Image (tube, rainbow, N blue to C red):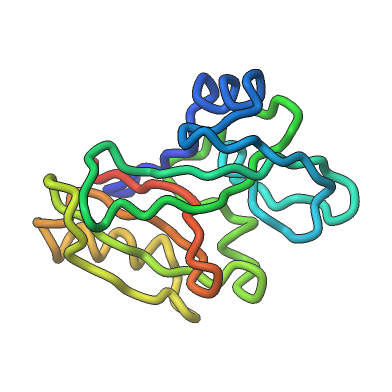
Length: 159
């Protein structure tokens, strides 16, 4: 077993977004047919372009308001989907498609201050996550982000 776990968006949070059609910033949620692969931040699976209906809204993955509180656009499936369950490994469909999902890992300390960044590139993201936590005790958790679009994908917690 790895020294980390993957944390998708919680179902109760996204259910509220689906029902109210408003994000935490007061913006109206936009529904559209997928024009890109995403992924859905709940299932952590890519969208089927031209088929899946997705919701676009502003999300902040932080609990503390500070200079590193990076809110931004994310997508979820418009339909109810299961949360990502294989939490002890990075989502394989994202990991396998480095062209559509170029990744960066950003580390934060317990005060939610950015203390680490690394591009995944051709590396194995599961191995890199394990090494980051092993070699950097001050990294409390990581965010996986699309390194081109800079959008948040998921949280990765130290075990």
